[in-house]
Picture 1 (tube, rainbow, N blue to C red):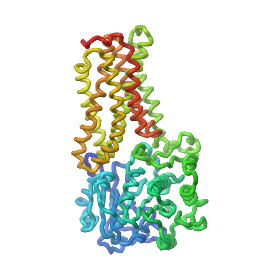
Picture 2 (picture 1 turned 90 degrees about the horizontal axis):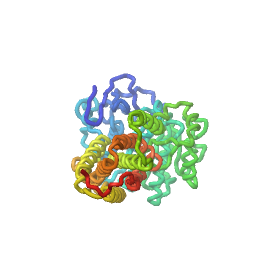
Picture 3 (picture 1 turned 135 degrees about the vertical axis):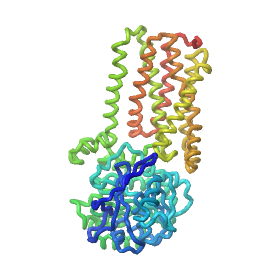
Picture 4 (picture 1 turned 30 degrees about the vertical axis):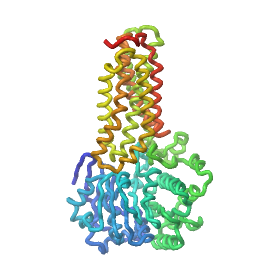
Length: 574
């Protein structure tokens, strides 16, 4: 069965090969209940489990999952489940008698499929009285959510398990940032617990990055991270638990008894000793224990981040690339660590430099070469020719830097990349086109002088938007989606209107000086737009989107110094 909506496609797979029980203890020898595989956009693979009732014997396997420790540490909790998709997390909460189950699901197609087409198969799980579902982006839903929970469960990351690379540096993920973790921690009751589960993908990276992010959040709240974190490992997964209050002796006793009963390996708890780790599912050395203890107790911690093979420093909303792990200065070491395979590099953010080089070559071939071949001899003076090139290159760069950054920043605000791309591009093109149309009437005479002033104002407005954005997004993040569409248009319009001035006014100036250079100006601007759309993403990886935004402001400001290609700034447009 295949279903579609505007943002995704879901394929339901009926196959005996579907067995979804992440980290299931090797002591469990019974058959799993009937399951249907669910694939999202041909990537994510989860499962929907069939059962007859809360005491169905076939659900016994849920007790053998490492994630079930959360329900031993928090008896009959009020639970918040973030993006449970196929419903295994919901089923676990239901099986362990959670008092109240609150679900946040960003994809309405999942909810619709489970409530309708697969309702009978899943025993009408989404219709249970103590289960409520909110269809919204997780960050927006958390902003609206006023309740306090005893347990908050994150979705299992890397759904391809050990067959995946775990390296998806392109993907922004606003759930796994310092700001997101801070808001989630504030939703916990005093004794509340957070549960996170990851597939084991050696060398360790994503679990370490999650822990470093929690460390920063906990330290910002004046808490000692070493007392608020525990972790255990199965043969294929690692489970991390964060508690709002320090873990007590009774919690540690439950953890150790649980690990021994199901042959899970202790990774970390306050007071753990090396001999307790790496007992059942052995590595050559207790690598996870060693790394997590180093992170928790290393001083300075930033030195550890610098020396480690992968980038594991905490991501932020400014750099929301949780799966951005590669380091340029450790490419060779990483290559050998990944078994001398290049594929992970092409799936990670290192594909960006290759795309950048490719775009430069294609842009030169498709844009520059025809001009070089067919353009007649460029008239002197050569300096003014270079100023023309510099001006149109800079405004093309600045426009793309601002556009790319707006799209990324509004992904969180508008709850999905599709909405962000559509609304931002529409708003920016519409307002810029109006700015272009009215620029001739507003500037009229003294074009060069007035254009310099507009470029300065545009730079100031861009910088001011960076200061206004946190206030704007925090104030309106929890509002309805359609109202946020309107707010996005209103927010972008003044900036887009100003950004519509530089290009047509530059063309008019060039027309007054040398009409033969106009085609070169168009090509230069197009070349810059193509190349810098990729360069913006690479800069964001290295320094964050705020840096890209500021470089966009600098692009408009510096463009004002390249207006010397015209000696007719006093003339009106004709």
